[in-house]
Image (cartoon, rainbow, N blue to C red; front, side, top):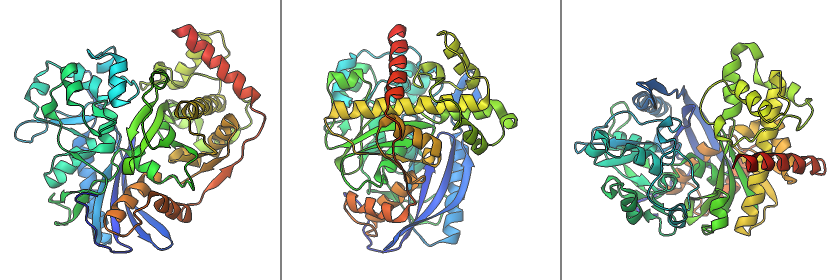
Amino acid sequence: MGGAARAGVTGSVVAAVDLGASGGRVITGRVGPSGVELHEVTRFGNEPVFAGGTLYWDILRLHEEVVSGLSAAASRFPLASVGIDSWGCDYGLLDAAGTLIGNPVHYRDGRTSGVTVPVPAQALYAVTGIQHLPFNTIYQLAASLGTSALSAARTLLLIPDLLAYWLTGSAGAEVTNASTTALLDVATRTWAAGLMERAGIPPRLFPPLRHPGDVIGLITASGVPGGLPLVAVASHDTASAVVAVPAAGPHFAYISSGTWSLVGMELAKPVLTEESRLANFTNEAGIDGTVRYLRNVTGLWLLQECLRAWGSAAGALEPLLAVAAAVEPLRFVIDADDPVFLPPGDMPSRIARWLSSRGLPAPSSPPEIVRCVLDSLALAYRSAVIAAQSLSGQHADTVHIVGGGSRNELLCQLTADACGLPVLAGPAEATALGNVLVQARALGAAPESLDRMRAIVRASAALRTHPPAGDGRAWTAAANRIRHFRALAV
């Protein structure tokens, strides 16, 4: 681990800054002989701002919340280091003086709709291995070509790297998050400068790459104790979550379930076949040279938007889930990955329109809509798990669900039924755990081996097993219906 700080301090307390699309938190963690102990210090919302026809991240408020959280953490514990993870693809641009040029644009903004690059899809995938998503960094930059902001820019920093720059003054790009841009060569793990030039994107924008465990620099931001090292973790939140998948061997699939669901397998090398590209699988960088072979599936976003639309009228989620469990299974099923569900809005009405436009009955009550969403997510998970095994040639004996969705027992059981595999649910705090473990390893307070780090997670987390029920024929029939509607849409 080049540049890593290895102090060999067992039980060191570290601070994990974990930023998600809907909220963030600062969590402290201590790795000891019996496992990992976490304490949430602060939690804060992450609401985008719509201004002048563009959807932005409120990055200055996020920075303020991060500094405040780290200050609070340092007042409670003698911190040994800090690490930051966040979502991928989005970025800030700095000018020659290192000043931010405008707020980072939100990946759900419509500016990339219909944007293309002058690189054939096959050639792009052969280099980057990244699935096509309209908000990939390459398309965000393509949408900005010719603008004054891009012309003035000298450095592009992804969200965790931008915050790290403000904390330390050091500019760089951590490789797991850099791999989400569709601008990194997945085989060499270097910036794909030739591809950038073909796409008309200036390679000069991209800073040196870092790896998990590297020390970025010492924090100098006002409000945080000076001299505290900021350590590069697996800064894409899914990469940190996969570190903390409590697998006991190589034959597993994982679902990192949150606003998005990332469904896939951990591989030793990328899968760059044309079949993989057409199946829209991605090869993102993982820790220790591993590949996160996965498909982005629209996740709990669907449920979050439904709850937002209903407000207090539908009541709390837990009672809704209890009633939804008794709703007739697979009666209402949508294609969860249809782009119509990507933007924010009135999700219950959108679901009803999707079904009625295809001559299908639509759910009429919140419990029915909740069951529709969860059945549809389980179907999407099933499709991705089956495809990941087929395309990679690696089989899975178990499906691990980590992240917030692991708390949803109905979703976990439906996933087990749909996949025909046992589901091991937990830990819910996988991203923070992965962040903490990589920092602790850099300090010499956690094992070098990824397998042994995962053993620590198994010893620390309360895990639940959901055996599959039923013979799977109803799920197969529902999956065939979704495939039929996809074929009609082509």
